[in-house]
Length: 164
Image 1 (cartoon, rainbow, N blue to C red):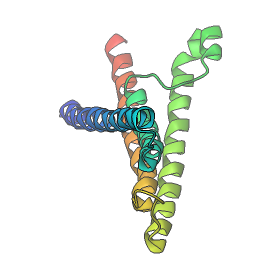
Image 2: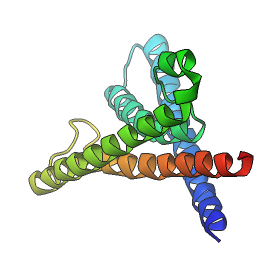
Image 3: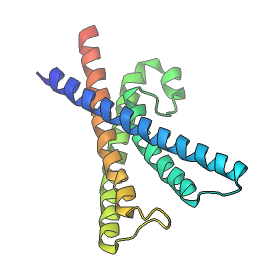
Image 4: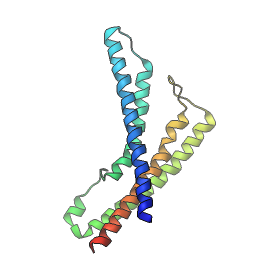
């Protein structure tokens, strides 16, 4: 039962992560391509293209964190587990707990920052995108990373039970 729930959540998150990342990167590539063509053919540059790219980099970085946890591609220092292999499970568990603490902090602070932006109604300079949307990426990323970390921890736990 629990395994089916995790699979369903995983499928939804994979769909969300992959499509958001694909659409964002394609929009960025197209806008950059058009900007470069215009710059070199008619010597005109689109000001909004650079701002769009900046926002896309923010989005893809934070959404990519969740995808990196799913594929176990997060950057981590693994010298100690290599030197003391018996401690690998404990150190992996400790690392995952640290990620969950980080997720809690970033979700809480991101929520507060987004709420402040909601009250001030600030927007980006050129595209006029409400900043609450950009700051809203932080709590979303924190929740997605927490879910992915819990999935990784569950996978490690069940793998240990099946082997032992």
